[in-house]
Structures are given as C-alpha cells and as structure tokens.
Image (cartoon, rainbow, N blue to C red; front, side, top):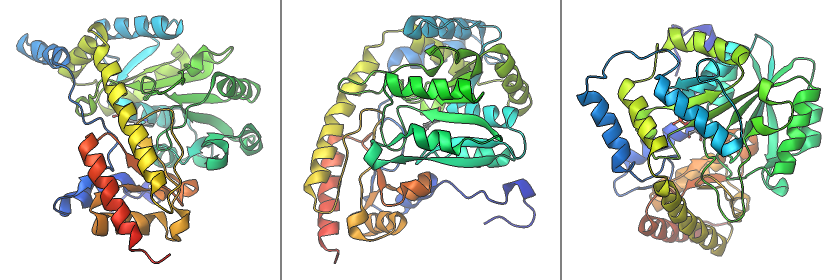
Length: 390
Ligand SMILES: Cc1ncc(COP(=O)(O)O)c(C=O)c1O
C-alpha cells in the first residue's frame, strides 16, 4: 500500500497483477508457474558470446544515449529488410531498457495532463499506469471475445474526442494472442491520420505468429510513419528478457522527446546487452523459428485440453504465447478463480482483470513452459474445477 509519503501522481497506481501472482507462486511448493510472460528458452550461445566478448574487450563503459552505432545500424537494416521502412540510425532509432522503458518514455514525453490515450483493454499492464503517471487519461478500447479480441472500428471512432492524443496498438496482443490483419490495421491507420493521433504500436511479439498469421508493421501504412512510434524488444523474439533491451523507431520529432527523457532517466542501456543484441540480429535466425514451432505445439495442446474441460471456452490465438480462456461459466471473479487455481490446483495463472476491466471473466495462461509441465498443469486444473459446485 502507498503511504502518505508517496507523491500524489502515484495515487492510482497498484502493483501489477502479473507480478502479484508470480510472487505468490513462489510461496507454494510444487507450483507450476504459467503466469509469466517470458519464453522458457535461453538465448543461443552466439548471443551470450556477443555479450561476453564485449565485457572481455573492456566495453564496460557508458555508451551513446541512443545506443551503440553498430546496433542502430543493424536495427535500421532490420526495419528495411522486414518492412521496407527507412529510419535514420542517428536520429530515428532509440535503444531502450526493454519495450517497457520505451512505452514509459513515449507516454511521459508526449502526453500532456488531461490528454486522452486510447489503450487496448484487455491490454499489457504497463499502458494505463504510464498514462496516469504522465497525467493523461487512459481510455479503454474494448477487445471483445465476439470480435476475436480485436478493436471494433466503430468503438474506436466513438471513443475519440478533441482531447485524444495517442492511440496504443498492440498486435500480436498480450494477453489475448489476437493478431490484427492487414485490412484491420489499414483502417486504424486511416483513423489515426484523419483524427491526427500519435500512434504507439507495440510490436514486441512480431515474430511469434502461427498458422497463416502475418505481421505488418503499423508504420508501413500510408501516412502513418511520421506519426508512429514502433516499440519493439529483444525479450520475446530472442528470449532475452533479463538483458532488458528494446528499441523504438519513429520520426525525428517524436524520437527526440523520448531521447531527452531517456537521457535523464537511465543515460543509456547496459553496454554488454547492446552487444548481445547486435549478435542476435547479425547471427542465424533459426533459433526463433524453432522456438515458435515449439510454442505452436504447446498452443495447440493447451487450447485443445482447455476446451475439453467443462466450463472453459478457449479461442485459438494466432500470436504471442498466451491463451485467454473464458471462465464465466464458473461464476467467480477472475481474481478468485486464479486464486483458487493457485491454492487448489497449484497452478499460477493471471486473472484477466489484471489487464483491464474488459479482461474480467477470463484468465491468462502462458504456454511458455515445458510441454510436460503443461500436461500436468491441465490435469491439475481439470481436477480442481471438477470439484467446484457450479
Ligand atoms: C505487449 C508487451 N509489450 C511490451 C512488453 C515489454 O517487454 P520488455 O520490457 O521485456 O521488452 C511486454 C512484456 O511482457 C509485452 O507483453
């Protein structure tokens, strides 16, 4: 709880629901932890060696604020090769402490007190608190199950007012795994242009896609590159969560304000992590494909198994590594349901309400755990819910 000593701007902040369940999971022996949003893989050796080598060569000092030039060059190449987008490595790319810092910087640097920010709901837990820290007003864009957990364009347009300044888009989406199609993104791009919105496009799951799903960088639609910050990260693609390294692409006039805040917040990102990230981009990419293939096997299993358990209704997600099953049948709040799973099934999940009010009635299960653990977790969940009197 916050004491009276905390600054007024923190008054509505609460600890993240994910971290709460993650911490609680540690207190129960033998728990299977499906609450965390990180790959259970380790980065391949060439990435670790990239970091080691840098340390051994004495690259242990501050780096330029925006990141080492070699990494920014490699990131510019990636944007061009993946999406045909050109970014100037000097002024249009910023290396950050994960996607998390990039999101915080973007909101602090661009949102004025009273500005409204459209955020996906359910959505990643950092959006709303950072809007509030900036003095802005988070406005929930519902991602409803009946729309495949995607924003309805009518809902988006009806929520835009004269005070709307920023729209956050996240595809593939955490926590639902939904992926926006080319057409859906194009419509959102038109709205952003017509209503003069700045867009923060969170694309940290860009490479974690299944079946026929394809990723389109939001900045590649007509007229939006100059108003879009593309947030990305090494955390999910290369299983580098602990390295804390991400990046942002954007036009100079949007990147410079982020650069300023970044400079006073952290000065620069850890030097060795930047060299490891460079090795990740320059090295072979088969690790990413193999990891996604394994996620796909688990995704199919968890989806099938949950739908076999009476009371669960689970859509098949097209991206990221989460399922977001509907648990309304059990007539419990998602918080109580996740608590029940923790204490009775010894499986840690995250209540949907941790991701916003439209997440109520769902839980998030991460399948970034071993296949064997997932098999055991599904059995435990089945046994626990069978005992519920519904
Ligand atoms: C949608 C989304 N964006 C951004 C992040 C931030 O990740 P990181 O700070 O590790 O790059 C996460 C992490 O879970 C996420 O799910």
